[in-house]
Image (cartoon, rainbow, N blue to C red; front, side, top):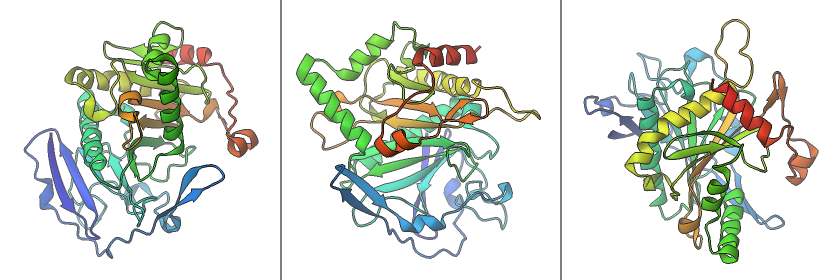
Length: 352
């Protein structure tokens, strides 16, 4: 992998990731007349809930559903200037122009463009392309965890307007939190309590229990995907390496080689859940893919938390969405519209 670092016109960093050594991406300057980046986000602590909240009022002015020919994540062509100065790229990561984090309290937000092809989706990538994305995720994890202001590095992809996506180009994001996100803080607490109670690792036991059950969706020698026993969403799958690792940097060569095929297969299974729309357009199930990694400065986290991805869709049936109404939004009390066993069967069949 070749990594090229440049500075955008407003002072933000951009990283090109290429599978070969032949491309000279750094020779293209950012020609936009941008003002210096102003990081106005702050974090505030909710004492009643024990959670940190990011306050980022400047995000009200972020780019919202531009026409396809004005997408800021496409490569630059002629006088059509975008976030990526080069006329082509394989994988690009850059600091978000409208970050939720990164003010005086620390943290950082980045955007990951999986491909320069605007009409594609992650599920359309080749295994080689998916492998390069994995290498970019790994590199960014290492860099961001080395920052003193970062405690947790979280990769995620939002896909589909139903999720709230405002840029159609295939991309994901990275949030380098200066605090533990609420879900991660609960996982650290649960894993520590499980270790104290049983002397074993919570996530290793979870994967072992699921590996022989009816909720398995797909697996290969090094990875396994299953619907969780207590799923919150109508269709939800979790992907784990069979040998527990705390984060992307700890994956071995065999796990890396086995990753692209099962991850692409899992995303394609989500696309196969529901009938394709009329008119021949590709079926694109809206989803969130959320990568959990062990945080820093949390006692025992590096030895207890397991790298894994949680993928779920807000679509519960053709033309029907799962809305988080009074109980879910108001109290965080989820009720699923399907059983995890039914969802696992549907996802297995969607791959045929």
